[in-house]
Amino acid sequence: MISDIEWKNVVLPTIPLIEIILRGSVMYLSLFLLLRVTLKRQGGTLGMTDLLLIVLLADASQNAMAGEYKSLPDGILLVATIIFWSYALDWLSFRFPRLQRLIEPAPLLLIKDGQLLHQNLRRELITEVDLKGQLRQQGISEISKVKEAYIETDGRISVIERDEKHHDQAGRKSS
Image 1 (cartoon, rainbow, N blue to C red):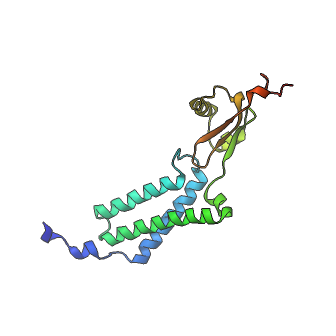
Image 2 (cartoon, rainbow, N blue to C red):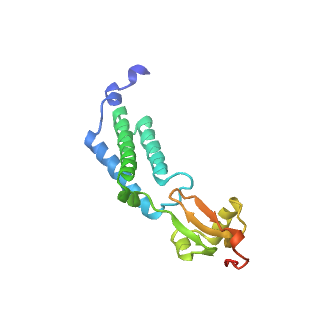
Image 3 (cartoon, rainbow, N blue to C red):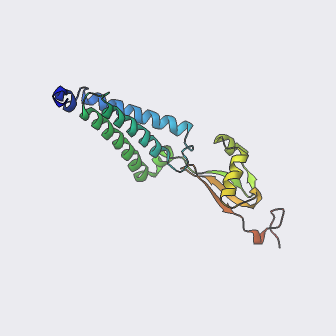
């Protein structure tokens, strides 16, 4: 029972601390870069860094609790390293606007003056059917009624409707 626990393995780190910090840093930054390039807009309402943080924290915490690390400090240090990088990237993005473009993608225009921008849809792997579904969820029945639609940094689609009072059926300004 309690006497069978090897307390030395529970409370003393079993892996060199610098190795834990290095592994946590390399994994977080590698996954961040990979997700930034490939899945930058697939998180839906969660930001990509939020999703990454949750997944890594869950894994790091689970390993520490399940005993794959031999000590609690090993897991705690890895969790602290991951939290540090998440905070550091958010802080850098806020403090240095030029870095924000590297850390967080800019909104991307999908519809301009009622016309689909197919190149941008392809770039984000969004089908016309998916986009129309998103428009319907916002109460817009036709693409021609959209002045601009963007996919935002968190994956949501924002829409600016056309001012129908000044446009006729073909989308041209009326006199």
